[in-house]
Image 1: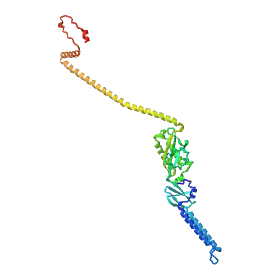
Image 2 (image 1 turned 90 degrees about the vertical axis):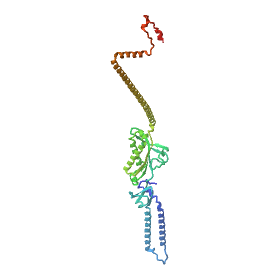
Image 3 (image 1 turned 90 degrees about the horizontal axis):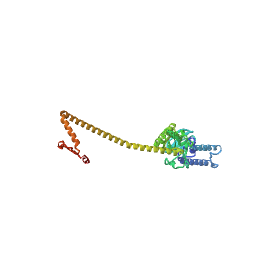
Image 4 (image 1 turned 180 degrees about the horizontal axis):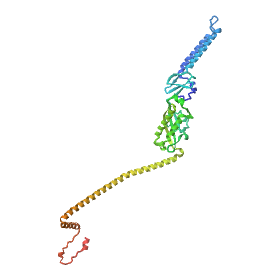
Length: 385
């Protein structure tokens, strides 16, 4: 687990020894016990005939040795606490007297023991999560940055409390939209993260920057874009803007994902908004129906108009051809008439009479054969026929 405490607060590190020091501590402890046992055995009297070096004024010499040896053992024990291990998914930041000194690589490392140098370990693979626009009433606190979820929408099933001061935003067409979203991020530079980022529950820099970025992006889009049409584009633009802001602040944070969880009008006007959307949908439906009718009628009208034009053109050509034929016929007859006027006049008379009388009942009377009597013609009977 990463230690995201204040880099100058080393209370957790002082209370925790590295696991790889257990064997070394045991060896030092046993060595100390053997030295103490040896010195205590040397201080016991060896008898009257013995040549004791611990009697009289000579007794202070071994006492000084004990102090020196104890100090050396204590110094070695203190120096041994400087060993520490950095896991593969961590970076270790070494502070010397509270000031940044170096960054440790994964593996076994050494530092001057506390309080000269302290180590702060930061996880560089752990995914942290910020949520904006709501809070959960469940035991898990969604208001802090130490969040983990198996799926991005796991808060949808929670009993949540909306936060209008965070979620309500003004769109580019001067409408208000209620947005809940989350940001997932991880540490990419432990030094910048520890010294340039304030990551407190009430002063969360990543969360504040995320809210600022989404408000800026929403402010240039219409509410319809945020609700459906350009939702993915808004997420990508806000993520890019948020990453640029954090990079400018040199916070050592990489944004993994920014996702809109819920986008809707405020609850107070959602019914009215739905009515407006329904009216717009009806309007679009009528417009589409009118366009469909227009698209179906225009080709038909164009076809009929083209047919009328073709019929008129055909009739025109027919009339012209007929007139030209009659004119040619008249000219030919006139030419023959000029050659023999009487014959032509007689022929035309006979042709005309033939045309007139060909379909009629005819009575032929010979005036010479009447003998001066008035002929009787039964016209009524003839008309009945």
